[in-house]
Length: 540
Image (cartoon, rainbow, N blue to C red; front, side, top):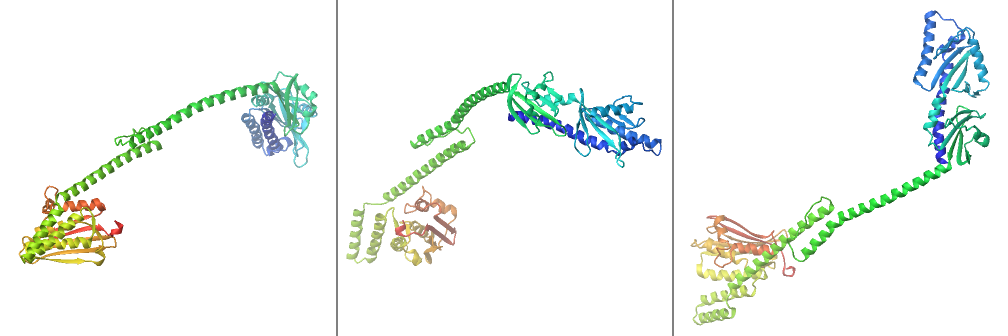
């Protein structure tokens, strides 16, 4: 029923649009100054003015007919026997204008009269629907003629046909007096419908269920503005049910099709997304078993592709870190082995050295006893603290023993000065880390001197976080090539632990930011600085 109303409203609005336009058109023409002047019999200033006035009127009505295809003819008829007459169709009414006026007046008796101020008559004929407007002289109010505009009924029939839902629908437009204006289908006689259901002529919109030609139908009616017409639309209920059944079948088929497509699409999407996840899980399990060569082939650029790429990068990174850790452990083991190789059986060595010391005391050779004591302390420190972290104070005491021994060899050609901050004494360092630096200062710096040699051992805390230990000499110095070659793995210093090993031990224990800095100028001396993090024993 709602569908019938919507279709009916579409037809109604199309018809009302035409009637509304005709209402405005006849009103404007009937009040046109040139039309009124021509019909009133007023004189013109000359033949040219009269001709121009007639040309204007003719142009007005001819333009309307040419623009609007539903207008069949326009007439303007004067009230006087010999008055003016205008027409868009050749129609010889010269000499019978009075008769034409009489015909129009007779026709108007059966026409609908609009109640508007500039009223018009709406007349229904066999082929045309006529708008008839009396034209009055504005000053006197006397009727001076008629305006007649004929509309093709066939045009309205086309409107009804194009706004009808289908062959199962019937449309009837009737006047308030039950006079048929038009019907669809054209061959159907629908006039009995109004007699059967007279309530359809009510001015309000009407909806009923009834029988049309013995078939259950939905019937709706509504009024058409600018007229006394009613539009009645009838739809066969059986046809609606059939259409609904067909629609239901189509809907069911569409639903099944949609479900199948959805299932296939879901399956494909599932495969598309789960396959790389399964492959990633498989590769992770291989990686857990220690397969560092496992990689995922990347064939997509979405999030899963990015995840696979991240997995590959992670495996490469972990493999690199593992290899680095293994190399570091190997280096540690190698260094410890080198330290072990440099050691002699401690009990045998201690007993032998102690015997030498007592022999020197008995023989009153104090310098040999003093030197032997320093050597014993040095060896005890080296053996008992191998591979361990010690305080700077312990390391400095070991260096003092080492220097005592070297002083017996070199005599007084050099002096050692200590400049240690109070805060630095308890800081932790690696054992035997200063001995290669001091040894380098003696052998490379002091060996060529006869006197005046100076070795400074300094320790300072920088910025509260760094411990810097420097060994500075005023010896012969050396260029970069010399000290680098002296620190190589294959060319060791006299202790067997080169400067390169010192650097590597620092980085292995404390990290890459720390290490050994060397500045040396040939002929002026050498400065070697160890940079370590400031840590105390409880922090290591």
